[in-house]
Length: 77
Image 1 (cartoon, helix red, strand yellow):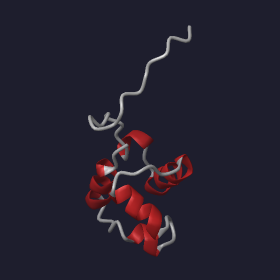
Image 2 (cartoon, rainbow, N blue to C red):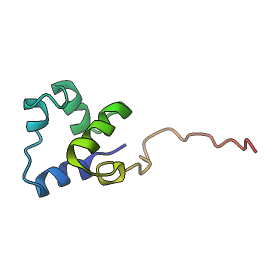
Image 3 (cartoon, rainbow, N blue to C red):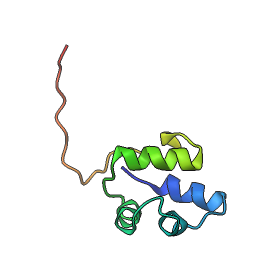
Image 4 (cartoon, rainbow, N blue to C red):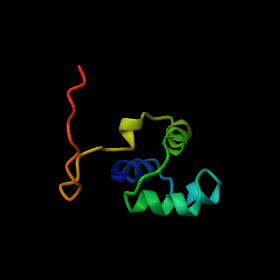
């Protein structure tokens, strides 16, 4: 997952990313995870969407990282 769209949305709305920590919306550790495009919980993403009044697709992209291992595809039907 990548969170560049989150930081662009914050900038567009005039919100400093550090305000998310300052106002106890997310922890400093979660902020760093977002900055580094690391995994965060679905709860955190939903909370950010509620606070920012946006959709998940407004703050997250799920483009596959070419460095990630290929995830096998399973035909379950």
